[in-house]
Image (tube, rainbow over all chains, first blue to last red; front, top):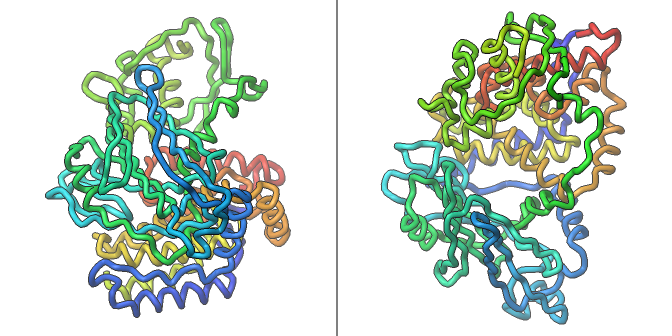
Length: 359
Length: 157
């Protein structure tokens, strides 16, 4: 059995997906507006899945999801020296159940059972900025970094479910107004995106989160947001992220305080001896493995890579380091390198203390 | 690249697109949604494709992002049990090799599919996944090790 056989052992494409692809391609080619003015007509969700997801979403949010809302407002609180807690406060009126569905009132859409896809088209961009990809805008001189990045977040369906977001490394925050829409602005320390704005569109059931690059000013952000044409489309959103959803997953209640023996196997004390394998790459996928024994003699903390033998710092890692030997303050690089740095550090440290010693 | 050429590329690559989507998503309805969304976005973003040589790599990258978007939303909307149930039923029809690959973690499974089933180079996979070549090499090595353990005799791949 060879991995090279994987292609022929993979399942064949089902006929219905094949014909969907072919008809979607035909429809897109026939759509004259497609590349002429950048507008795309979506011939989507012909699949049964769309209905299935919508049903599950409706069930998941519970009965209060059908209630209309009396008001929406932001609550911004300081937490510690560098934290800001942002809460989207929603007041639900249970007596106005299904109000939006019956179109008898202009009540806010927050808390209704479905939200529509938002169209967000900027009518103004700073000079030199262009659309990078879907809802992302970047300066041509700093392509792919900074600029604006828009993320719609659905407002949680009831006040019971309202969860705050904790922004970290905050240097200042304030409430803002964008064309009558309430918002929160946060200035952060470090990263390619050091500013964030949340602007509420409760009439649509959405909050727009706008990441703003450090190459872009707050004034440019305000002008961009004020000239952002936000329109509710006919299309029902079948997959979306809620405001505060990520925080829910990261609440302390979900943290682990105990670790299994398996999870602790790479944690060692001074005096422990550990077996490692030294990998020497022969080809793209083949490596020669040499076992080495390592004894922990000392533990030290470094906040730069100057302790490492440059011979063991490969080109990829080198690009991530500044002249001072520290990792560059670039969130982009850090997040991608994180996992790779661990084996590199392991490989590099022995050279300083002798071939078979680790610190 | 013209719209017509992109259309031809998509039709030629439809088996590949399905295999890539299937390597990340559990069921065919999700695969269909991801592929359909990727086609729509590919046509919309076509003016941004600067080098036709990388059209397939670019297309697979769009598809991969759509798959991840579905995986994120599915995680919130459906129970794990229902996903596992669907997966187990479908798995009965597959070969040992495909089942073993399917049991790999997401990143390893995608790397193996792109390298062995789709014939992308390590460099191309690094571009698709927006990471380094050494990261992809490590994923392929890890995947081979895990597959050896899973498959009969420990030396089957």
